[in-house]
Length: 154
Image 1: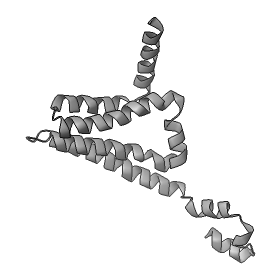
Image 2: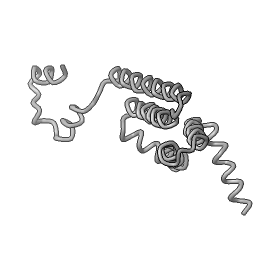
Image 3: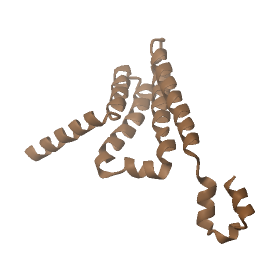
Image 4: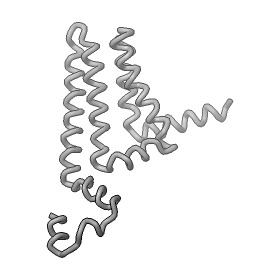
């Protein structure tokens, strides 16, 4: 609609720079971002609950690990729709969040390794719990404070 209005006002696309044209074409409205956030977040919750339900089946540890981890990744990816991918990536790699980001991604990988290759059910569940712990900012700040206290003692 904006492009039509610009053409009707006599403003041509050549007046805009290439960067402005690319940014104009790639912007998404806030309502669209909100809808896709909700879709991804609810899908992530669905896959996590589905994985938890599959844990009760015999040999369901593999399905549990895959669906639960996939659900967490999709739920995390939903935040990219709210803030935009570049801004969100900058935030998760800030120094205050870097340790939590590394541990959480490591827990994703270790959960899958524990269930699929090592076949250790308890270890896979422990890594799934650690995945959730790194979502909560209060727990993350307490953990970081404890690490600093331990480091100062040595």
